[in-house]
Length: 489
Image (cartoon, rainbow, N blue to C red; front, side, top):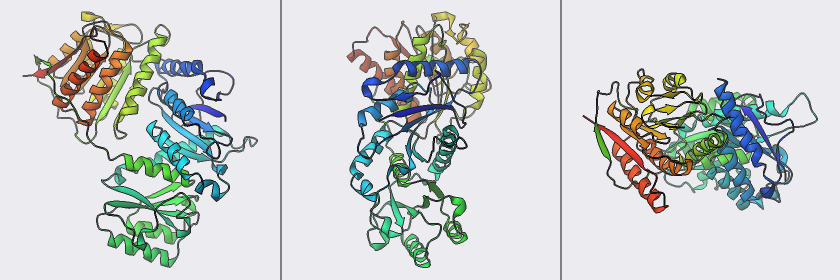
C-alpha cells in the first residue's frame, strides 16, 4: 500500500513542498520522520515571513486499501504525524471514488470499514473524502481536485451548528433498496422509529424521488415531533437535482448536504453523533490570589463560543527542535479539544503582531504562549526580542484585558503571569523554574481544556490546574514549578 502526502495552503491548490520528489509513505516501519520535521519547520518559516501559514494535509490512500488491507496502526500513526506537524492545519483522508466496484465488497466488509472510520474520527481528521483522478489527464491535476474536495467538505460541515442536538442521527436511504448498502437502519416509516432520533434522508444516486416517496417523507416528519431532518444527496451534484426535489427541501426546511459516496456520508454521521459530548469532570484544588491593579474593561466572554489563540515564539532556525515540539504540543491539544472550539494558531509570533491576532480572535477564552521566558525580563518572540510583561499587556488594550486564561509554556514565566492576573486576567499560569516541553504540555492540555469546556469559569480552570500539578508530581516531575494566579478585587 502507498499513501501519498499532499500539502497545500488552506483552501487553495498551491503546494507546500519540503523536497523535489513526491512524498509517499509506504508502511509503519518506513515512515519518513525527517520529511514530517521539515514540514513543521517550513510552515513556521512561512509564518515568520508573514505568508499564509494555515495548511491542508491530504493523505491519499491508494491500491487495495479498504478492500483487502486496512492497516489500522499505520493509518493511526500517519494521522497523528499529520496532526502534530501541521500547526493546526486540517487533515483529510482521501480515497479513490472507484475503490468499491462490487456491492459485495461493501456488505462483506462493513465492520472493518466502520472500525477504519472510527480510527479516523479518533485521530480528529477533518473528513474522509472520495475523488476521481486520472493521473494521465493534465487538464485535471490532483491539487485542483483536492481543493474542490476540501471545499465541498467545509460546506457540509458548516451545517453542523444547525444539526447538533441531543439524540442519535440515523440514515434513511431513498429508495429503500439502498438500506443494506452500508448497514444502515431499516426504513423508519416501517415502524422502526427510535425515540430521540434525527434523520438524514439520503437520496441515492438519482435526481428525483417519486410521489409516493415524497408523501412518505412528509407523513413521517409530521409524526416525529421534535426530531430534526436533513437531505443527503449521494452520488449526484446538487446542480442536477430536479425542481420537485428542491421544492420539497425548501417546503420542509431541509438542509441539502451533497456526498460523493456512502463512505463520506457514513463518516459525516459518525462525526455528527460524537459532537454532542459531556462536560469535563474536574478535581478540587487551591491556588494563589493576587489583587487586581486595574479593573478589567469590556463585557464577559460569550458563553456559547469558546475560542483559543495559540502562538509560538520559537525560531524555526535557532530553535528547530523546540519549534517542532511546539507543533507537537498543538497537535496533542487539538486531539483532545471539542470540535466546536474555534482555534487561531500562529507558529512564529512577533510581538508587534499580537494586537492584530487578538482583533481577529472571536470572544477569546484563552491564550497559550509557547516560547522562551526570562524571569523579570519577559517573554521572547520569534525574532529574539524580549518584551516585558507590560509590553505584552499593551497588546491587549483593544481587547479589554478580559481574558479568562493565559498559559505561558515558557521557562521562568511566573512573573509575567502574575502581571497578567494583576491586570485583570481571570487565571494566568507560568513557571517559576526552567522547564521542558513535555511537562508544560501535560499541564497545558488539561488546564486549557477545562477553560474551553467551562467557557472560562475560574473555578473549573483552577481545579484543573491543581489536578494537573498532582499529575506532574506522580510522574516524578515535582522539580517543575508551575504557578497559577487569579485576580481578586
